[in-house]
Image (cartoon, rainbow, N blue to C red):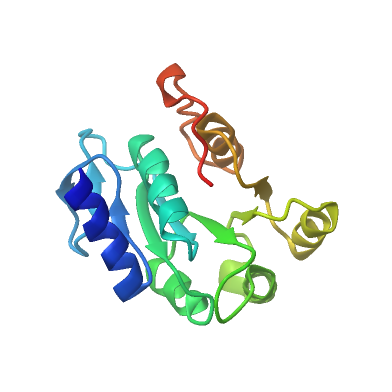
Length: 176
């Protein structure tokens, strides 16, 4: 497990993201891991988060819940990655290198092809003004780090994810 974790953190540092993190058995044509279930993933989630430990935790939680999880660590080219991957849900950190999550969200809402994309904003600050700004820009959800696994899964489910997947064994170990 330690070798795997170092490898993923190394991948985050080198490529700006983790592709297909989670409890996977197989891979899709893009090389992403897919869940072990035969029904396939619930959908694709892109996490734009520059902190590798948080990206790793989110990827594990959501991958275990059945999502095809992709990660990206930079703000400046996040829009290109969103366009390339066409995620079903976007998890977007507020503070990113190169470009803020607020700026990215504003651009997403200005584009017809991404206006309806469900976006969950994450922040470590937790100030009311950040939540207000995110919602004013069109975020569908907002979480302050740290948060519990159950809280994350409930918000994702409310945003359109078909799995409420909040099982008792997920525990309160939040990301962040």
